Length: 347
Picture 1 (cartoon, rainbow, N blue to C red):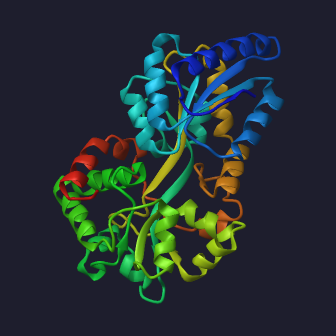
Picture 2 (picture 1 turned 45 degrees about the vertical axis):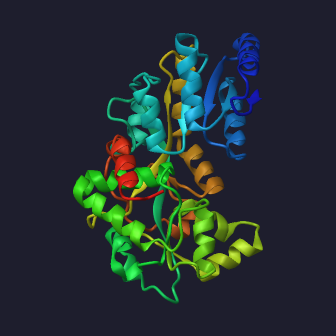
């Protein structure tokens, strides 16, 4: 498999594309290629690429980067882009690629049967294959579970100066606020943002694991985090992180009484995919029960399909109600979310 780093300089990118062409010519004799532009950076995904090659003979060429870098690259490449598939770990990132015109619709009975309607773009532009919940890490010595059973609670005076969050440019926070706008409207969502800002124990800093560690250290009593960060810390090899999760618990608040906000990792077929059929086949492969199980087990996410059991270690956290809101609906609210958060002082 050919692996590329971040965007780098343009000359390096052109050389990489030439490499894709040479590799593609050779692989075409063996079963073809699929050129994957991915914003997922997990070593465990390599096993998926290898298994796909074993099962189909199709070689997966991987180009990695941040969502914004890959969107910019595909946009600059235009109709000559070698990209067959774009994958990202957030519905908002997929929506941004959609807005840039980088997807083409796919009609697949396999995908439509495996992926619930609320976890895919309605016209078939992109599909989720695993889920992650944006939930609350809390100090059980100071916080009762019923004090955080609704997202609205995080903006209440109860948690004044006791909340840790990452910055407003986090796509996960943008998606959550987008979901609040979709559920509540801009006015109430704006009030929530201002309440969250008033409750911050410190200015936003770090990633989700830093927020969990801050709860354990007593910097704050509650924090927003994606579920898989906590599960990874609780089940990983780092003894210090496992000790943190002994002091901190994970709560799954509800939005409008309909369950916790969930986001996705997903992907779509590129608008100018030179290997369209292979791209669809690979996307269907990612949505298979075996692939969902592999990703869930190795990256601590939840399968997208309701009939795919959650594997260990995520099975211990899988018994929660997921909000049925369409991921495409809250993803499209990102510009509004950014505006509300900026206006509310969420840095």
